[in-house]
Length: 299
Image 1: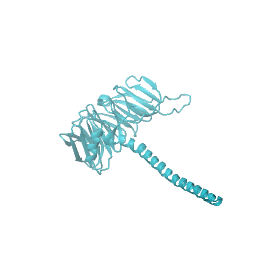
Image 2 (image 1 turned 90 degrees about the vertical axis):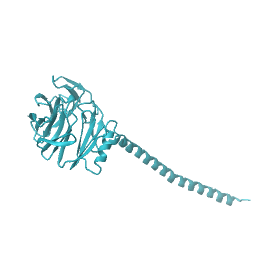
Image 3 (image 1 turned 180 degrees about the vertical axis):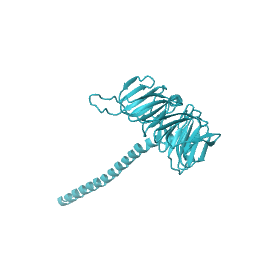
Image 4 (image 1 turned 60 degrees about the horizontal axis):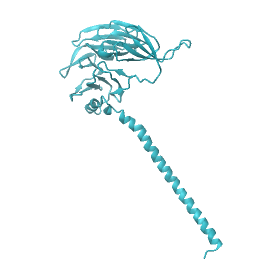
């Protein structure tokens, strides 16, 4: 038989047990929440990386996997992709690796490499130590001397190079100089359009278009404060990302589509467009990812 004092004690005991149970549940709830948070963080940060990883790339993944095995432990300094994306190359301080979608691969010892490019025939060109070399039968052969280029890009009949002084030079596979031109100043950015027919240099907030082979001037203008230039699928059309206008009375469009032979312009709406380069032989845009080439979203 339990008296009134016993009931009070029993009630206090039950309350203490309830508080103890709640106290134990809270730490467990926090642990579960922290675990779910960690899982969500890993999922949202690692998954995009895995999707966008060089070896997992939809178009260049197998080439990047081959290149990574050839260059294990080597610092990657630059890359190049063939016009049709059938070959790719990456260079380090003293080595160049090149892989093809047909399973061919090579690791070449070349010290002092500053730039790589593939020409219209998918041959690899290398600028190293003041020399310009071209791949022939799996061997790099010197075709001439050249100032270290900041940009080296293939065109339909060889390569075009742009050095730190703004000097442009077009070279044929046998080393013959096809054309030369001078950009008004240093700091230009070189690209070549579809088919390797036209070349563009972004410089000084504008752009200069040349015949890629002869470097004959086609057009030079600054229709807006050009921040980046993309070649489109038509060989004579480019897309320009425009910076803010210096004059509030004359606002600049966010982007312009320009026909470079006629100068015809079409304003385009603003949207996010990542810097990327279109391959000259295939409607595919590429950008660097972890020292390798990866597919990029078209502009």
